[in-house]
Length: 291
Image 1: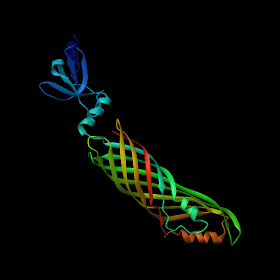
Image 2: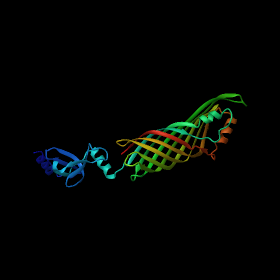
Image 3: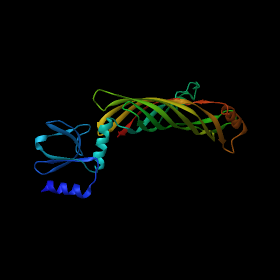
Image 4: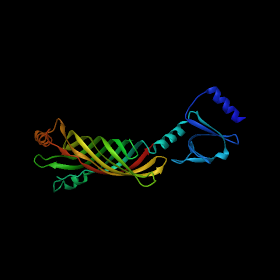
């Protein structure tokens, strides 16, 4: 009776779609996508199939197979699409990051420790990768890093007293070419990327008197990320990398009450023709989802 009702439904609907139905000799049905078959077995993907694995049923258990009988639900469509391409096409990653911004011009003396500490910062990094094949893809990256420190200081010539403050923010937007290397049959992989983009620099600073410095410049990036698979397209990415080059095109905004000698010193240090090295290395860890 159940099989007869299925036949009647086919005649009424007259529709052709991509999901198949296997009718057992017991009368119950399996809503699946048939992958392959031989004289003994039929191999298929169902909504409950494990990742990248086929299920199997003996032909002795089958009464009838209705091909392209109905529209598949989204879970089965996702699994059959993944099976047909054999790799994740899109990967989204977010990481917490520790940065190191080396400074080759640290002065010796009282301020040496201040500038050494200023080399270390933190931030985050997010990215989206689109893979053209199992190994090769293109990526978009945004990274943000902050470096800050403060110290009470006195200006000996004038006796002015206040704070020495650096509160630097670096933003990077870039594109990359990516190579994904798998380890045997595991989904765990190594992702290598190189690319270019733009660095945007801002320092809300003080040398007793406050000032704001902004700049920008072409940026470069290179990274290696070990993506540890947790199953189901979820990964823990552990990354090391470099984002860098220089920034220039400075704009300088100073407090109105800043004395002329301070103004002249800052303007000389950060005129529009100067460049500031902002190459920074990083280590990051986070979560990544691929599908």
